[in-house]
Length: 127
Image 1: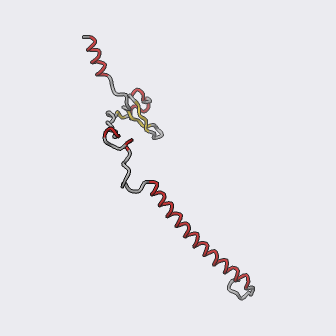
Image 2 (image 1 turned 45 degrees about the vertical axis):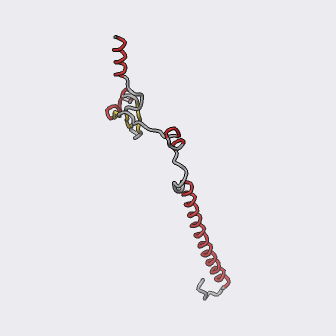
Image 3 (image 1 turned 30 degrees about the vertical axis):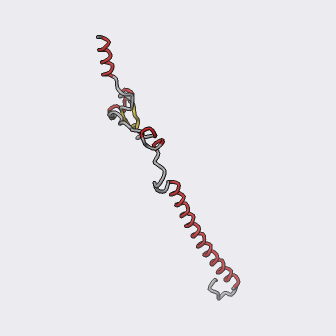
């Protein structure tokens, strides 16, 4: 009988070993502890006791999901890499257009400069 009472007492006092208390230090960093006694004394007044952690279901080949919980391959739309590649191509195209416009502007300025240098008369609008 004592054994049953001891076992019931242990089960009643036993708690899950997961993060049960949350507190924030003076730097604004959030910390988690298993009990209130693990929280530094200066933060205990503001520490918040958390409920049990939620149950997380994992899908996999045995449960009828895809392996590793990854989305199925197929018509899932463009991947992140495809989107980044398209954005990089747009950026390169924009940069090439700007470079071409700058090159044309520079050539026009160079031609104007050469025309003015060749025209050494003081009555020229270049001087």
